[in-house]
Length: 225
Image (cartoon, rainbow, N blue to C red; front, top):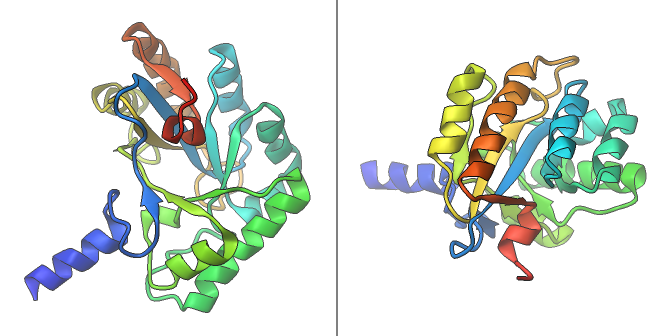
């Protein structure tokens, strides 16, 4: 029983698992590059994060929730208009465990349609809310032609202070790493994302000084040089 439970936990939450659907958690390890990803947006805190990325000329990948895109279409458009990559993070950010395959596909289909209608582009990447995948996730990926993206480092920026978040980013930095941050807090209105922004102000200069470059997820998976 213990082995079966451990296997299920790995299938559902393991960053390197593809048991419930095709998934990646890191890019090419031979290049000193990192991908910053942001979940749960857009939110009222997203513009501050965009300003920091713009200051350093850094691309990011933003996994957006359909409901938040409908609530804040102008901010969603600002993310895309700034040249950042857009991913699908479901419509309403539910935990997918014990959901039916139909409900799982509906969540990502609604988000995909909202992003397409609002931004004029269809994401090719998806990330499960809370990183929790479930039976039916693979089917949704296949029907929507989406690749699952997990992470090598999760910042825990929803509960830690900026110096601790920055320490996780700097200490966990590896070539080909994919970092999970948040520019929203699920579907919260006016979420407090200042700790995330302050952590980026600490971590980005430190990582640049260490010789890392920043790319979006597609670039880090399929580098052109």
